[in-house]
Image 1: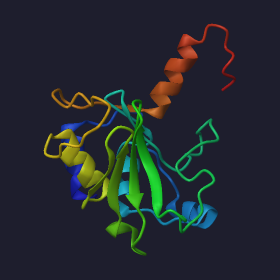
Image 2: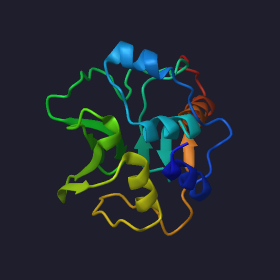
Image 3: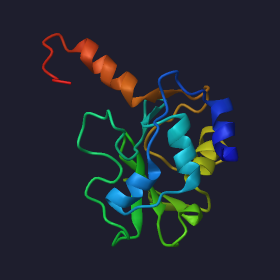
Length: 174
């Protein structure tokens, strides 16, 4: 397991029903993308979900994912703009990989905020998250990640379950 994922697990424990087991060879064959190894370890430990109810992390679709949109939805490799979105906040902060190297383990993070433009970081995704959530990186986000408290992670499965429970009419159709 990638060292930053191990440290993230200590800082932000995974939920019991978190983590997604993806067939990465199938993802590569189906979508044409080979994704960074630290990200694959993050997905295995946490899966798709939300950090501190603010920062959503997207993944390729797990087999039981009920929606059409996901990390690689309508994205071809190599990306024309050199970017792949892997996360976003509810306040319009977007987190990308700069996919300019043929080796995805060398992709770095770029953050775009609506009010403060682009900011580049010489880290992979999980190293960046570890630095951000531990307060070692200060990025001018529009969202308040609440990093003054221990971070929490909520799996997409928990979010879907909450939607089901809150929908009295049962109209979500899952």
